[in-house]
Length: 117
Picture 1 (cartoon, one colour):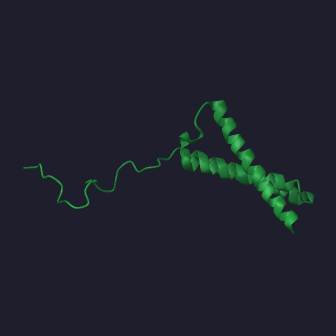
Picture 2 (tube, helix red, strand yellow; picture 1 turned 120 degrees about the horizontal axis):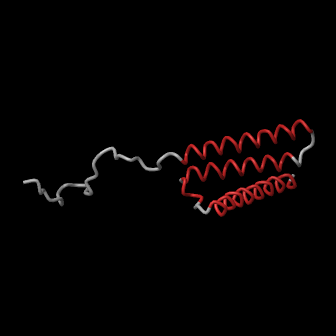
Picture 3 (tube, helix red, strand yellow; picture 1 turned 90 degrees about the vertical axis):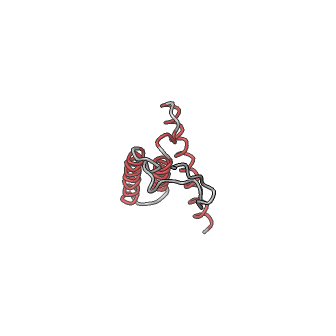
């Protein structure tokens, strides 16, 4: 039983290392910071790469050709879907451009100065 758990943990660790290496390789190649597109885009890219690589590695450890190719297809779809989500999140702003209300800077108005007279 512990053999299966160790295999699962090893696959997850290896896929995370490969996903980080892929993100850094792309960053070194393009010369840009990977988080320039925003944290949501970076997280979507990492999760997609990590899950896709884990499914790909796992497909080589199981028996049955149809299940192997099914897992490989799901891995490709996962990477493509998360890459699309990453590109969508890269075009959005992280902070709203207009605040809901005007900030005052003070919780109570006893210390504020009235300069409108």
